[in-house]
Length: 390
Image 1 (cartoon, rainbow, N blue to C red):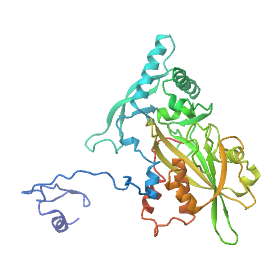
Image 2 (cartoon, rainbow, N blue to C red):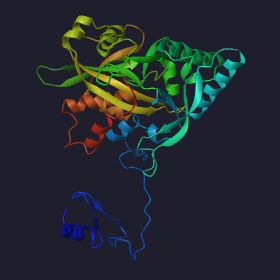
Image 3 (tube, rainbow, N blue to C red):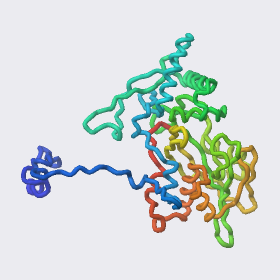
Image 4 (tube, rainbow, N blue to C red):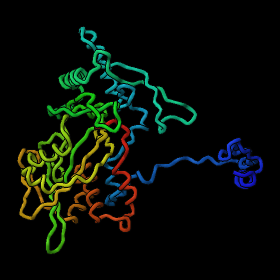
C-alpha cells in the first residue's frame, strides 16, 4: 500500500510496516477518537433468534426452526465440558457434573475403580475465548486411566448411568431406558476416513452428557399424476412413547444404533415402523442430505446436539404406510396446507419440523422470493456442532 493511500484511508499519522500489505495504525493515531466522547452501545438479542410470542400470533417458519435449534452450548459457560483425548465431546449441566463426582467418590468408598475424574481443560474455541487470551481454562470431566479402551469406557459409563437409574437420580431421561447403544465419537486418528467409535452409551443417557447423537429421518410422499399435488405420509406417535407421546412425526425416523450405517438404519426403520418392504424402500429411496442442530429440552434443560441423515421416498399411490411395531398410532396422508397448519399449531415433534422444512425447500415450495426468513432457515438447518462424528 502506498503512503498516499494510507494517509487518505487512515490519516496522516498512519505508519506503513516493512511489508507492503501490512498497515500498523490505531484509532487514536488516525485522530478518530481525539476530542470525541464515544457512545457505549449495548448488544441486543439477535433478531434472527428471537421468538415472536405476541398473543394470538402464529409462529413464523423461522420461529419453528428456533423451537428446535434453541441453544448455543459453546456460549453457555454454565456447562462443563466432557473431554476425551484433548477434544470436547459433550456438555454437562451442573447437576450432572456433581453426580459424576459423587459416583466416583462412592466407587472409591466401595473399593471399585472410579470411572470419571475431574481435570482442568484449556479451551481455545474463538467463540468463548477473549481475543486477548490464548485459551480459557475450566473444569472438565473425563475418564480415569483404568477406562482407556472403547470396551472399558462402554462398560464403565453405562455402569454409571445404570447406578443413577437405580437410584432414581435422573428419572428424566433415564425412565426412557431403551436397551439400545448409541455410538459416541472422539478425536479422529485419520481425518478423511471413517471415525472409529470411542465408546457406546445407552441412548437414554446421552442427553445427560450432551453427547452428539445421530439419526435417520425419511419423508414418504406421493404426487398425483393428474394434478401434480404432493401429499406426505404423516404418522402420529403412540401415546405410550416415553418422549413426545401423541405428537406428529416424520414418515419414518429413528436413531442410528452403534455399528449401523445410516442406510441400514433407514431401511430397517421403514420395515419396523411403517411396514414397508425393504425391496420397495431400496428401489425408491433417495438420500438427500444431513441436518444438524442443538436442542435444549423444555423441562430439564438437557443439551442434545443431533445430526439427522435425511431421505426422500416417493411412492406410488397404491403403497400405504401402516403401523407395525407399536411406535406409531396411525398414518395420515396430508396435503401441504395441512402440514403447515399442524406445524404452526405445535403438533409436530420439534426436530421433525426441520426435516419437513428442508423437504419443502428442496422441492421448491419454500423459496427465497416468498419466504422472508429463507436465508436464516437454510443456514440454521445445517449448524456446525463442532463435535466429533462418524
